[in-house]
Image (cartoon, rainbow, N blue to C red; front, side, top):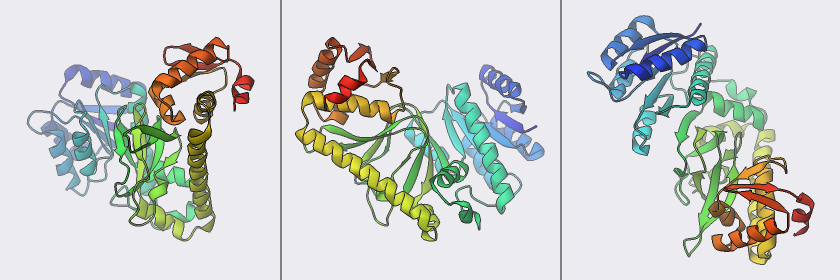
Length: 352
């Protein structure tokens, strides 16, 4: 049974969280402040620590710093759980070297997923070569990465987890690119801004999709901006590490180049559609594209904002809404709030 140390000064939250973890068969030890939590960590050496930031006597940042300086506690997986939701606070926590940063109130599923992944990651690291940093590549482990699925597993096991709320910017167009990303949970849109300030969505990435490969080479800049369409968790690995993995792996390199090529082809087709397609054709193709990207059955609802639909189609939001209304009247789709459901996929496909 794995032992978790929960350091939280809010009594109700501490007891509620402890109960959730105990129901998942974790042994939970609690501490009501940072000073007591530090003492408990040194004595019991838990398998994982969850720690609040804003606490009396000793805040979460100081707890982590002190534990990171001690040989016997510096490798314990450490997750911040805080009401601070500003990106600067999240970055501070991650820059210190924490394994994860969760914002309150934390969904039970997200909390348990973060704990499971960090514990599994710690086991793999200990079994490999007693690594000092979670992002450092264990010697010989590159030999086990033979294809894209293996690379995704590496990201999940050794990448840095980052959580973004809806609308958060993950990186900006034309910024220097330092990392490659994998969507662990959620949806992310890649956008470009034209000369008139209009947002064009050029791709959508969902669970298990890579993004950021377009700027993988040295001194490259991001081709697009990446924005969270909903609350997302991503795994981040430095592009220097990815390049090291690719150096002696011809097959994987070809798969990466194929992936980049397919993405560029998709962007090219979308630009051609914007330049030459009619408004009805653009709207129909965009609905079908969203359904395909999100792996929906034709009968499933597609939950997407009109602004995002218009951004992908490359038309004004008002024009898109009018076209959707026409398609609804013709019986090709149904609309209820943000939800769109395809009724007659054959006629919708026949539009273009």
